Image (cartoon, rainbow, N blue to C red):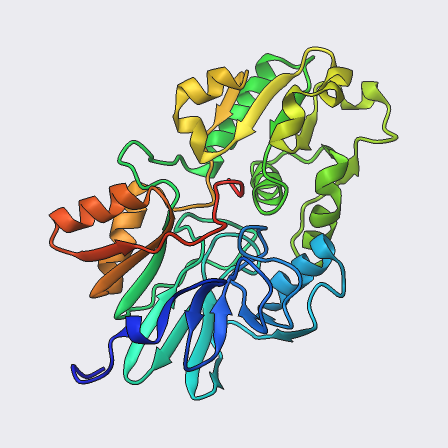
Length: 339
């Protein structure tokens, strides 16, 4: 990594379809169909259908096939974590991002420089995916979903203890847990199991297929059953996992007077919980919180920080006060839906 090498922004930059590596002729998480895409993980604002060729981890490819169909890309190339390959002379390596099952950071090396495109990531423990791996680099491309000092996430097992305490206090009320269907739902089930809860956990139909895929890929989630076709009395006083949108719709009325819970980093904002009618907010996130974000940026040793989505301006401003070089990429198609 010499000072004479071309700067990273001359060969890795935002293009019309997304973040583009020019010498490798590939995009990372493009928001529209391209010839060659490297995909960090299976959430819909990163993984889309219609690419001619997709390179990703095995788990991300399997998730894409479940969500979009087996023919959602022209070809798939599975790459194991940690193995470097050359694409037109550009070194590309996938390393764990700790976000959801199969999630990866993309390490790109060319002309003596290294960039790390982190996708979405977290540093917290998660029994359903490989832990985040720090890679030192010249440019670190980071999310900023929770890039405000107010956001400090709780330990997932502490929030599950709150859930189980609520169930003990309200044994006749079913606990509906709103959780994003890919990653958060399965993580919550696994942490609940690790806390000793071994009864059946019931699933809304929208989260069934991906939960079954997690089990197929080796994540033990215990006895999970669909709500559909199950006697209502069987679920009384139990746990039901569902998409957050289902908490307030007609579907939820079948449970009588349930306790509405929501597992999300956004539950740190109590007003948001009250607005959503959430009785039991669970502050569990699959993204880094503010302290972890700043810690990670520091530990990468990166000369430049590029921010892809979230609270870009707040993070860029804060890093500037520390004398760090940072800028917002303002990529199209990124949102907070995966939280």
